[in-house]
Image (cartoon, rainbow, N blue to C red):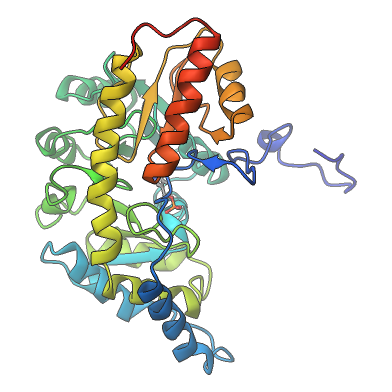
Length: 367
Ligand SMILES: *Cc1c(COP(=O)(O)O)cnc(C)c1O
């Protein structure tokens, strides 16, 4: 970091902190941030372009502040008996989550997560001056009712963020367990960023919403919808929570072009969702293949998988990168995470990994 030249020092908690983010490297197979690897088809490109062209004559005006039409479309997409009043939208679910903590976190409030989990959560807590506490998942990364009750008793958090399928482990938490969490008097934020990749996407915490005004379900168009570049995240919750988000959002936070492209993508959702089925199969096949190599692979219901353990995971990460494949160094000690790519990308990943394991005399079997 460049030395600070202002006479005002940085907030103490920010001193020495590097900006968050995975390395961005060009010209390699990028399997490191769980994107949908399939670019939009020409039909989808036309739809997105037409949507932007349609609104371009109005860009002298601020966007629809409350993105009402987009929220109605998302309510319809979720198909859980919700209306626009139950939906809120922002620039990625990262912003949705930050707004939730602005509204319900803050000094003398506590947010809890179950680790290992998504590495952005501590950052939202820090930036909103919310105390961040964690409890460990079980050894197999699952969460059960005992885990939740223990966490409640020990910490009494105001907010619990429960991620299912969990990043970076891929672990799903059943609706039965989430329903128990919903009975406790905290704000329960269920981060379902990867829900569409699961075997039963309809088994969503959105089912709990009508009876539980303390439940928030967070979703994104970055992963399954293949729209990471557009930045569109959303949540489903009781209308009172939507109203709270409106208080803390920055004015006109969601651009006209973002709203238009998200609506166009929703109107053509069959295309990305078809690829989701393919990516789900790729994930199951990749997990089986990694296990045949003798690696430990926790079951994943998402579009990525952990694999390991390695004595020196950074060295393995670098050796894969040297062979043109970028994976993520994240999660439990010794493990790496790989996102599911196109068939051609997965072949390159397999070749690179076999090569690295052979060089390290680590391959236990030939699949
Ligand atoms: C990728 C991801 C998100 C989504 O981020 P966006 O800001 O919507 O791109 C949210 N939660 C988890 C756990 C994720 O892995």
